[in-house]
Length: 185
Figure 1 (cartoon, one colour):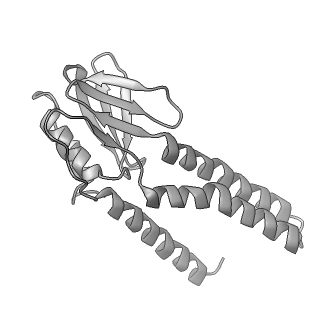
Figure 2 (tube, rainbow, N blue to C red; figure 1 turned 90 degrees about the vertical axis):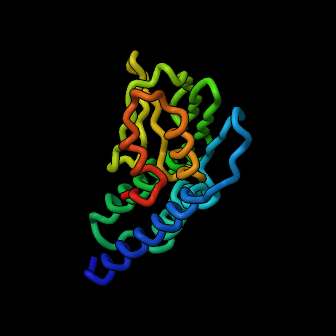
């Protein structure tokens, strides 16, 4: 890979990330007090997931079948690239289609791609932290159960504000500044 190709990949990745992050800042209308707030991944995240999980593996397969392998190591590179898109893109697609976070007057209900639904009542919440590597907020209870909330959910800024308002008084809110707000990394 040349340095020009590497620069194009870095710029493209940053542009796609900013495009998805912009959707997370969407200020969707808020329902009346006492009603449930529901958050899902938006159209942009779902489009990227479809591209990474379905379209790109097909493109890689098509390119390999039409171009063949000219070097002895090419089949290994092909297998690695195909596995990357099938595993990573497949995970992203399942997350995009299944994840749902609901804030209700009684607590938080989270359904994610690979976990059974988890419900946590507001008084049970012990801590809130942000993991910049995974780009998710972790809400943990006294008993140790956790909910991970992805930063790219549509309306994440509204979600962060709703959490600020509803978390028990003793729970620090510092991590929320990284989630869906201007201070996001």
